[in-house]
Image (tube, rainbow, N blue to C red; front, side, top):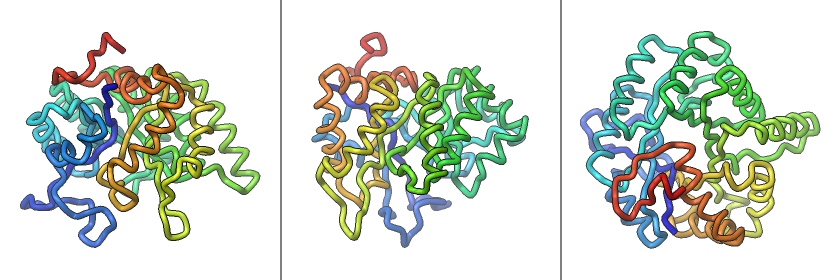
Length: 295
């Protein structure tokens, strides 16, 4: 089946201005990461298209990514970085949205931002409503239970906005009873919000000095997400090349491939590409990429 990876990153540390991320001494390889390299690492997994997700707070890097993506047809979309509460948001949104590859923005607990404080501001909510009016997506991510409650607040304030929660497998169900109750309540409520999608990404992780390769280790969390959101709201994303420290592309792909193909062909196709059409409305650019009508 065709597979669309909805979460990769592109950057080039050799540019004269450098990059704001990744750091030179971090775990993520400090090397040029462009679509040509992605093609190479993902070709054995059957990937036919990818969506880039921002990894820079610099305004003009939105244009840099669009220019890079334009040159390679494996790129079917980009998710940029704009702050919906800032002056000039509407103009910048209009500017980048002129390119059909621009599919939305990523805004959350990133770049030292406090999502809860920001969405309490009327200007921020007004910007998110503009995003919805443009038929674009909000990707968002956070490290704690309160983040899930923030997503619910955004749903209430901008009910027409499609929202994608990134890396939910990394948010563990808390052990502390009060936090666990808050987590469970938020997950139940999010399950009722049909405009919210979830990326089953960042699945592999370090545990006591090693990275488990067995599906059995990850199955409880995957089952929780599956049972909460169902087959129509889950998306495939690799988080490549951030994923390099825990395994190569085939290894991280293999875990979710084993899990979702066991759900049957229809469910697997929804996860690996059909749901991404609904969530992102990405641009078909090559003959081996599925058409929106087939979804």
